[in-house]
Length: 311
Length: 257
Image (cartoon, rainbow over all chains, first blue to last red; front, top):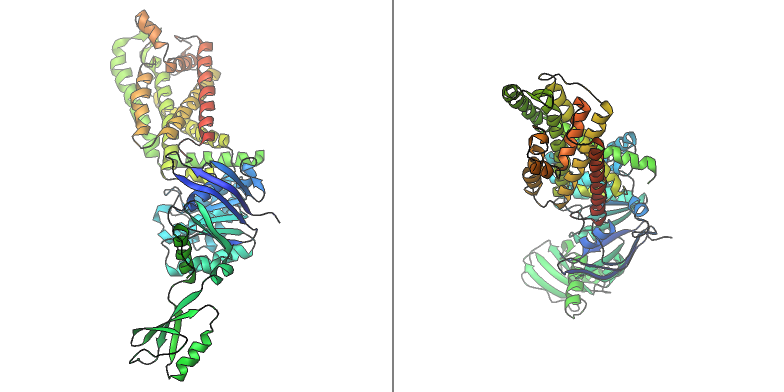
């Protein structure tokens, strides 16, 4: 199967001498939901800029569904939809015009472009606002407008650069469901986000970029397996007078009714519960102290910059 | 993209541009019409009545082609420079840049938008001029071809200005300090035969002189400049500016990092 995206030895040096990309290799399989993560200034946006031909590369190769950007730019662009990080539409234009015009730029006849605009604006809850100038939309609506615009030509590869930044939790979850649906229908998705629970929830594969290099590129499950220890927060039914001493477990008392427990990889959580139950300590609820991916992300980035050990 | 899809993309840009300037007609269409009407009143009716004939025609009739051309030039230029720079400023130019549409289609789309506004304003000014003058048509084909080519030329110039502009100040510097003086010294209000020989030769450097005179020939059958020389100059500029604009777009000047 042809890769949806193939990047070989991609470099970018800006005119001011900044070396944003230092030889990136990346491959995204067709149908994947792929997370491209990295700290600010890592090179994510430059990579996306080159893929979408908004940034000129210095060297290297990029192919979209086998179409090389240098040799078959038109064919490559036809496969691609972009939801950029910054709002980049004419704020004075009506919502429906923004989406339909984008279809027109891809050569889609006006009538069909309007039909598709209607379909996506309805799916994304913007149909009622179709005649409003885009400047009248809320931040979350503007994000959804950019998704509708990116889909109007039915791209096989959709790149989402921080699509849920500044969006409230309810709309974020509805956007997740929408993205899962179009991914299930066959659209390959590349997602960059600073909400790591979003990446963990949605993506099957992941690459982490830092300082212009790919420092990790693997499956989400494989990456999370690298986590050696997780810290759980336990909410207790009754207050504890003192920290219980349970051999084999590292516990910390946060307050009267809250404990933190470090669970090593391979250790069963059931054993901890059994030990707590034996001491008449009832747990009402349990949650991760930090997002697992967030913990790994911090470790990988720190480790890349200074030698360290797995958490 | 096949030819049909490219045509759809082209039409999309043109319709978008026409909608854009039509939505704000109070800013785009009305002011040049009012300004030109004032020229007709002041230079044509009030001062013109004291001047008498020029090159054998009434002064009011003499200045009408030049004033129409001035409106076409400034509006073709202004439409493209403001629209293209606005697209850069708001980053919505990226909507086109990420699409498979070739750069020449983008260029032709913006140029056609500029020509559409130039023609709309030109037509409005022509209608107003009928209130003040007995406009006649000497050679319709010359009128249409010269006004269209001139509009294309200045739309291209506006496009290049838009590419290089980094601020809203940059899009007003060229019209104010270059375009306006060239237009006023381009023979709209006078025949260069009135000038001393040295200044007649200097005037020949001004390309707008060729356009105004060719356009005037179409209406009145009189011109300070040979018609073929006018066409050669206009076509030469159009070809040169089109090639340069396309080169800048292909390089991504001002729009790609």
